[in-house]
Image 1 (cartoon, rainbow, N blue to C red):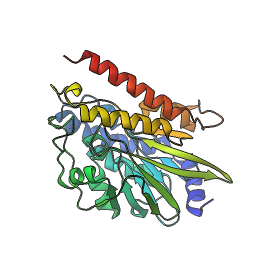
Image 2 (cartoon, helix red, strand yellow):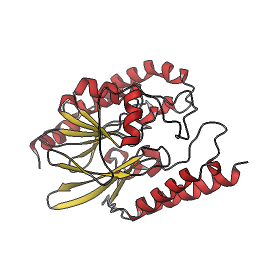
Image 3 (cartoon, rainbow, N blue to C red):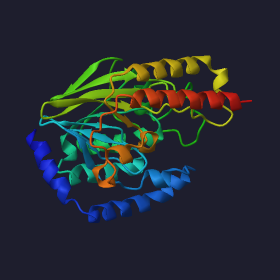
Length: 302
């Protein structure tokens, strides 16, 4: 096991609830600005959650309602998703509580470039000096802070993100390397044009599991937007559903923890973690549930 990971394992055992109290104060102070964006879920999304090791070199460092994942290596770490703007100090505190340094995060990647998953990336990049990577459709949004007109949420007032100073473009099915970490880029548009899922291996001893961090598959849109008027978006969704269903997927992680009962399945503090975290049916069930939800939405559109 990597020396940094061994050190983190000792530190995480000693992390107390006092750390949560300190970051809770930050979240409470940030709540007013979240409410100002007319976001009813933001109050929950910025509540802190104690960070924990999921498996091998993969850690949860997000909040109660929004996932952020740290993948550690001795040559620099990868961070997936930055949550809301108010999430940035909470993610930083969680990384440090695990015994790591934010400045050792060398790569930041994203599931989709909406305010709830990418809002904190600019600040996390500024503090860490990390490089940010995204598919072309998401790269332009991250750089200019404005959603593309073909995004179903384009007309929402709260849809913008804090602009990121520099973003490197990656390609679908590319392997992105950082130290010993190898992330596969998987284009999964629908929820957003540049939607991306990420896959990698984490190992304990000789036992390696393939992780699949799935982007949101929900059909969320601005008022008056009708998905049935946008066959290209429906085609993107169906392509994404099929791709997620076919993925090599031992452990499913999702951009919002509730979407896959992440804490109930994987958090050792929750008291309900299964003896084995492997579930190679999870991605298929996740995609099928999203397909059924989209069908219900289409049936309700007038």
